[in-house]
Image (cartoon, rainbow over all chains, first blue to last red; front, top):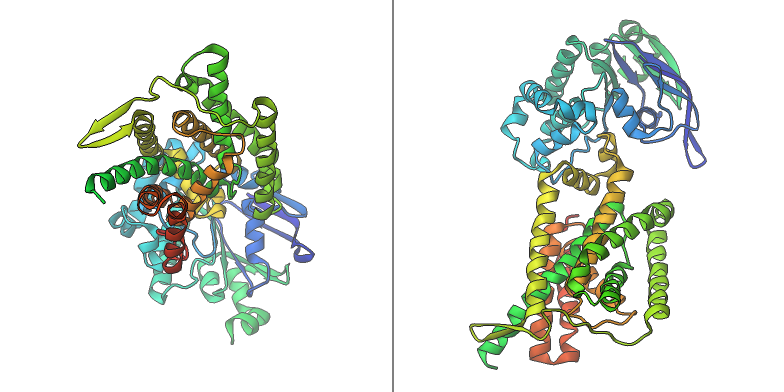
Length: 234
Length: 288
């Protein structure tokens, strides 16, 4: 479904991605783990169209996306829930969600999708009229995920969904993600919290210094001595 | 000082303020969606005023009737300027954008000088030299009509921003451009339309006030300055802030020149701006 081949990207002279290849198949929940600065967020920017790779291909269901911008990625069926949530602070919860359904396909079914998202996150329903900046961190994360779902994506990418959340909120968020995946939504999960993301995923990649250094099933990765030593602290 | 004179100056200031607010609103619209501080703002307005005068001189039609011609022309010029000048230059940073618009000031001023000469111009409309009188206050009719239209336009603009998909997209871009892009909002199209809308609105402001201000080709900077003060006063990118700012600055100017005389009074809006920025460095409604 999603296929990356030899993706390179840099900020000025600093090469951040040095040829990343990875793929996600329909229905999968794939984890991408790595420390801060490994290039995870840059990779997400390249997939979502916020940034153009300097080399390599990004294709989604056969459509080439590299360098074609966010509109093309969203239209193809990719939705990114960005790091730091990036909700629109001075807009209501409802407006944030409505904006999620900007592409024509999603706009046509906006009301139906809205009902499904509010069913999934009843808290958002209670706070529909509130400005997003008045929400707690966990609620903002729910809103960011809900907004991502409003685009009716085939692939939902989550960049650090657990960042800055209380342990309880993290559990709640991951339960919602699991349920979405069980319902057939394909996901790419980017996390610093390796234990959590490997537990939730079927397969994973480890990224270091802009390169994929390890890949395998979630179980294999969790048992790998390198991963255990570097990320799990055991 | 008799109370009715103060009341007169206050009401006149409020009416003027409504027009200032509209000028600042179009500046805010452009600043928040395109990230451009448009120093040629007032010059576009002067361009529209000269457009209205030209229509009057060529056809004898009332300057107000030139709106259906002048406003789309200005909006079209706005779209062209954005696509071919502003967008390519803005990639080089906000400062490059500011320099570009300063350059546009000179281009427009000299173009108007060549075409119309440097004399101060005042044009007669159907409303000129008529007055409205109520409760002992006498108001020039062109100002009353201009302000009333400004209020209506501000309300329409606000309604558009709050209640339409296009308006929500504009606000989304203003609040977080990356997130707006991630929603699949066509940034380039929305920015072009917002820029054209802003300049078109400014064109309408020019036509509506053509009987109120007497202008020369170099009057643009005065209008830019007022719009800038109002926008900074209210908080950069805040639509409601610009609205309040316009009214406050209008009244301050009116009362200032009445109580302190022309020269000192003209300083009052700046003093108020400094005071506001001392206590609220990001403007009345600005944050962070």
